[in-house]
Image (tube, rainbow, N blue to C red; front, side, top):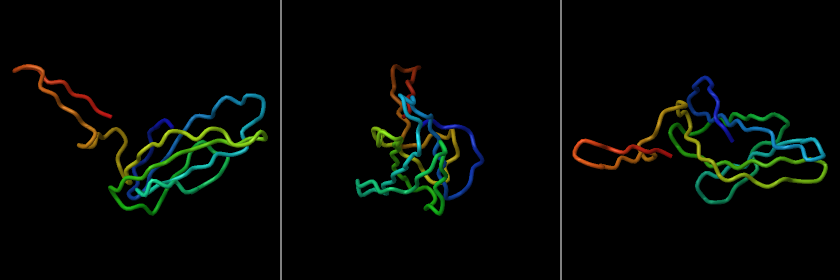
Length: 113
């Protein structure tokens, strides 16, 4: 999945992804799976669009998602899990995703997930 800009809406997470290569048969639909912390992913939505907005979420809570595409040949591979935070403004880095390392008395290294 790749993130694009969108309007910030409380209690929502917007997922966007790129269509995979057709490889002989057009994509019929995508399925979004969601896990709220149990480690088990449940089907949440299925459709032909390459985006989905998950609504009525708890503000600031993290949600885990996976996506897969289906065509006439069957289901494709399931994506790696992606984490979203309900109502998070795109481009904002959460504190638990920021890593600061002191490199010297005058230099810091900053990295983020």
